[in-house]
Image (cartoon, one colour):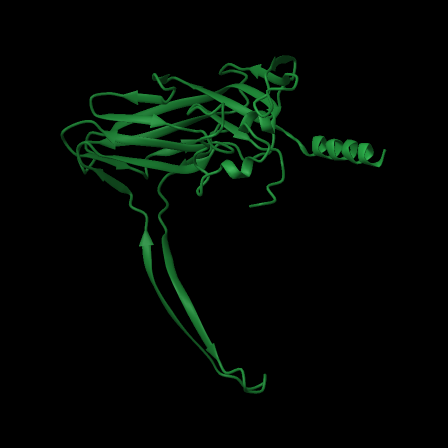
Length: 261
């Protein structure tokens, strides 16, 4: 009897600890290529996006396809939020990187002590212009798309699917809702300024628009393929190779307290 009660309590506590996480799908005026990467290309550059991360990292790669140098002006390249807020990729500030060492005599009375310190380091400032030689690329990941713990939507549509973490048990329910550009809970733009001349006498502007086209809510174990999500993060938190729903046009929102971070 005691063993049965213990088992019941353990299962109940485990169920209470599981949380629903959200999988967010993005659409754009770009067309996904064969492997679902959101990508644009012309005779000059190829620009590809991969958003898959927690809270959605605005990560993209610019590759110079041409046989001449390409220049990127980060001061005039911006991330534009839904409310119109403009965030520049270039910060006109110098950052001091260094370390300080302090010395004191612990044997003297606290009222009379000696203290000295030394500092060594360097001052760095982000480059405003990036130079890309032919057939080279650069990857950028500076902004997060959604920093709240929940994206609200109507849970009127549901689908039952097989469990990813235990196929022997009954199907799990997924809540979902689709959106268009007018009612999307999140939209943003990525505006880039590029030129083939260093003085930007003839600038080329790229304006990419994105919006949330679907939100799905499911058991966290369904999204990650396991109960213990933290074991499937890489060191920098950029890639999630074991996530069964992973795609470059998606990101996910964890509603749990991140106690291990």
